[in-house]
Amino acid sequence: MQIKKILFATDFSMASDAAFEYATSLARDAGASLLIVHVGEPPELYGGPRYYGVVSPTDEELDRMLKAIVPAGEAPPSERRMVRGIPADEIIRLAKAEHADLIVMGTHGRSGLRRLLMGSVAEEVVRKSPVPVLTLREAEPRKQALEKRPAAAGQA
Image (cartoon, rainbow, N blue to C red; front, side, top):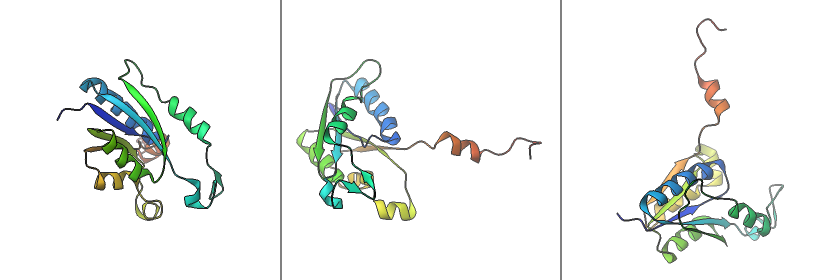
């Protein structure tokens, strides 16, 4: 498979940060370009700019955040795009319209009730995408990893 264009979808989370490193590395190794995309959900989907007490970032703030996503080291050719809509639908639409060969995105690794209530954009993209999708799960926070380690011998 020859990769000429990689669509990287970000929600500005830690999961997206990790996925961006992979997308950048893949683009650099394949000599591909990188399309960095953020899909803002229209506030009217949730009844206005406030959603469960959280104020959504303005378009200007989102644009600043998108421009701040810069590859480390030798950067592959890239462009940024911010669109509004239902994230999975817009990611798939852009992948088709831009003739992307691969989609790379992070996933939060939610399960159970949280996944049922919040849904999974990554899962929907994987199911509906006409091109391969690479998803990378959010790394477990260091504190939780340390808490899961067995206690050293002799410690109580």
